Image: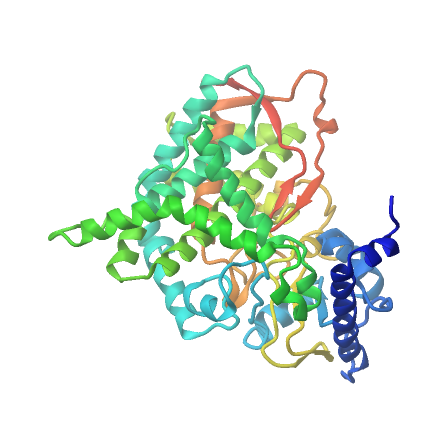
Length: 500
């Protein structure tokens, strides 16, 4: 077998590409490390050429939390082309998400996104570089049509119906091992698709087309999170060396092949007289949104809304199975407070222990442990340190939720800590930020906080849950897998038995 250097002599074009890359790397490397930025936050010493990449280990929330134990609650890390600033305490979160929110609310779209930065500035809620007027309009539209009190009340029947279908499916699987993630994903996805499009896009049974839709949404997350050398060396972006941008374009095309007939059907219906509005897509069609605008909004709403709620519900079920006392306390509350078989959304606020279980799950397992990275639109000072313009700013809410100076026994699942507590998830309590804070706070959290407790309450009220034979609760694997959302590394497999 030829050596690496022999391969270069056999393939001159490969040698030329590598030489070009090395030249670009050195050009990119020189500038940030020779810049004179006054008083950056402390951090580990960078390596030659690659900076702090070896310290970040794929930038997981855990490795960054461990580094913060050494370098402090605000620290800086260097990449060859930019700095990364990481906040890991309540106090730093207040500075980033409240006091300097107006300067630290920029965002860098992922390299793999098929739309350009300029296009996303007009069509996206999640990825505009700044909080521009179009972004404000789209946020206000989604709030009014999807997340306001009036909108949520009008959707209650849909969530109730899909939850009932989930319960019936679980009853049909009584005594068998079920994968909670599959059932919950289909349930939450159909809640969203019924609200957005007036139809189910998947069935609870695992048919081929269903797996296709689930796979497409999974690949959206993978494309947006895929490590890319162009993130580190932007000069290589146009080369698309890993083919990430190409894969993104292909994926968005596959998704549009599913959405396009639905959009055209709505447009045809709108052209007829007296067409009544039925769903969110009707609103977009009435407002004459372009194909690109419709596609991007639907992809963002489906991918963010389904993954985050699914992972939170699975984590909650895992924690309750692992902690039988908490499970019994929740079952007792449901028995005491629910006077009829059907759990309704109006019951949810009468169930303080259920709400405490949800909050405790979000504290230990926030769906977005580092939130979505921010970018300063100009340099600013935070806690007497300089945050450079165009750096990347992360808030490690996973670390904040496990801070020993704030939480007693932070590694333990104790819903009781939230009983008789005013702590909430609306972005004002900076020791508890599962949905972020400031102007970039997740706009969909009001919907999530109806979907999540309703699903958990139904699963616990109607069923007892058992681990497969030979597995004790204390043996349950709680390992994490971090992509765009924080999931259980191994899906939760449990056995339902009907209680009623």
